[in-house]
Length: 321
Image (cartoon, rainbow, N blue to C red; front, side, top):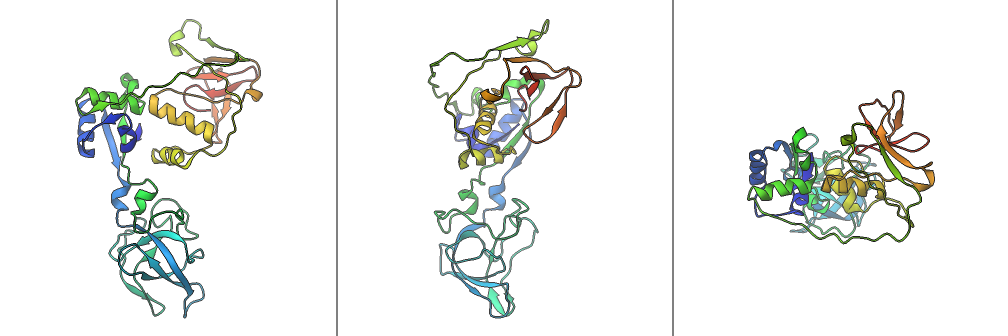
């Protein structure tokens, strides 16, 4: 189970440090498997603005850039990225900075007889992705001189805990916060959730078919929402999911993943127009399979719970659609 420090503090009002939180998690029986603090490694990198980008006098594919870094005079950087241009906000690394991807320390040097006092960085050099066709392009409103990690929300430590089968209450951030509050580490935040009354009857129903093992799924609720326009989720939501290793897909899927991780409340979204008949929650049958949202096909068996319609399996209940 992964969560960020800021996400935890949405549910827990605490002055405790990261180290104190990690120690208390262990004391209450939630083993901490790791803490990833990208912000610490990325602290030297700041937002820079390319003021000028002129052709290098001795190399066709290089540009000599003048870069504002917020403090002091602009600095000169030789850059070979094809997207280096005046007005671009990007990531600047000063001499002495350790580049995450290579582990090398930047030094002042000359490139084809022109001095370069720093580096404009690609996403791959930052250790964030394999993208290396150009330097990173930051939002136009990113404040010059601001720590890069702060701009993209990468200064938020990610905590990973091991959750044992008897602690399913801690498969959501709110449950973890509740445990820490009970241990005296802070005050639990429980914002009120306003109920939304239904305005029309649902045109389909759902039933549970577990025979003599109803404990496999004690309850399943369905709600139909009309007038929904799907598309990419907001940047803040995508960043929140990426931070804990989840791939953003679209607004509807992303918001269900958010609430699943936040409230330990598994959710699934179905396109009503594509559902045949009613929905049934049951054990999978031998020979059934599921083409999931990750593009992979999974073979199912009767140890798994699924949500299905009259045509077949629509999702692996509580796990993947």
